[in-house]
Length: 251
Image 1: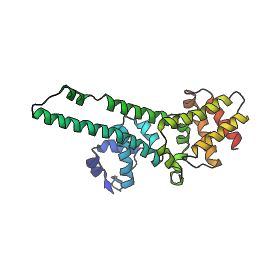
Image 2: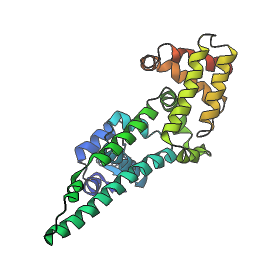
Image 3: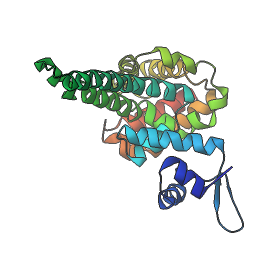
Image 4: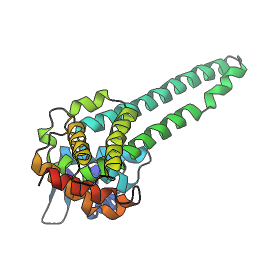
């Protein structure tokens, strides 16, 4: 166990920031002494690493709160993508070191000016960050995270490793395809065969990552109703329709 002072020295995060993370429920300590001092175990420190990692990628604390609900397999995908950025930076730094050696030997070439071009790295960073944000804010995943299915069933995930081998763009396309089935079914109503097909398509896709039973799907459907106001901003009327379709199938 590490004290708040030790964690602050290790990470460079101020004590006040650690306290704030505790206050908003982002990083509660593992234990609190009678004196009020916070203590952090290895699991808490691992969570802090994730928080700092996502901050480095430019995510807000609200974004990070959602991202932390993801299964570890999805985090590995995100970390792996960031590793590509770090490797780009490493290669860029190595080129600059070689250029410095040439300058020290009075050897200059105009191609060395490319050492200062950060466009590729910045483009990669923005692309990855946008993909991750789009995934977690999608009509497909947001209610799933809000429902608590992801966080409460992480230990039961057997097929989630599949997400590591699926490109983010493909995941978004698969999710959007399911949402489109619901939109098209709205014409026939939530108890139609089209709506049932959409519900089953949803279940088939989500079971690739998180095995769910009927109770889990009822919670997901309820989450669409609870967060209807937020979801209606993206697609008016769809959230309530999905809730009713889930209720019809998983009554």
